[in-house]
Image 1: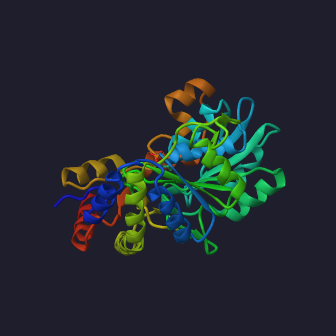
Image 2: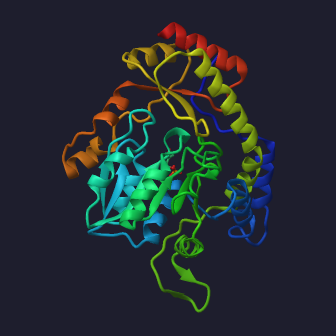
Image 3: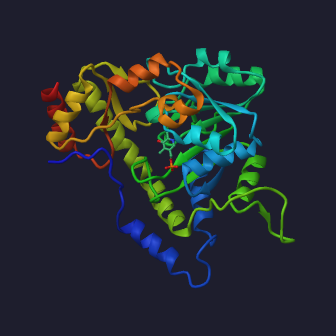
Length: 354
Ligand SMILES: *Cc1c(COP(=O)(O)O)cnc(C)c1O
């Protein structure tokens, strides 16, 4: 038996949908599939305006452009996250200001945000780590006090709700990823979700060179961040299957939680991207598991400010909680590619490896 950390859930229906989009004789782009995907996405999350783009990173970039963030500006970024958020801050010429994680959830620690806010701060970004929603009430309170927008990195959090509201609709902009091992996939792809229709319109223009239809003109900056029709077609099928995927994730997650009595990074609200534990002998356990064909992962192996690019540019600073999580975290798969017997095998292997 082999337990993969993640596998894309692609089948006949997705292949058929992509082929249908490809067979359009005249229009191979912007022919309705992407728009239909956006509408289906809005229905799934229960509102907002969805702008489909080529990746979550593109969506994060457009989120900063939406607020005209640029040189001289600072953006609050979690120290424990994927590098994409910090990189787009660099892309617009602004400076990421890192904030340490909370030891229980691994999400940004709201109590440490305010001391990092300066007169140059222009936005607060958060990541819902492994699908676990951040403590948004405290984050929104801080944002309101300082009149700052909140950008949510929801790349691993599709299906995650907080106070009955889907993540991405709690702050000002939410960015989702459809990379192969996320909750759903379109191969590559992303969505910018926002409750503000003006921001959605701006993002729609900026994903297509900043052009307005007529007359032929560019009043603002823009790039080509469009999603393809094939991706839009596949995305609609994946969204239909998402409730089933989420059910399997929940079942697998609860089984691991009940049967493995370990220190967890956990919270009660989330969409169960993976099961995350803390171990002192993490590297040994991971090695033993891989020798029995069980893949695991680490969220994240290095805090972003300690990655070479950021360390060399901004110097070394200390993020004790993120550092401890990086050192001790082991994350186990719970995805819909795992059958009940995969999960049994996984549990058995982890118990032996410990
Ligand atoms: C995957 C991921 C991204 C990047 O998504 P892309 O669609 O590959 O650009 C950003 N943030 C987090 C937390 C991720 O997991």
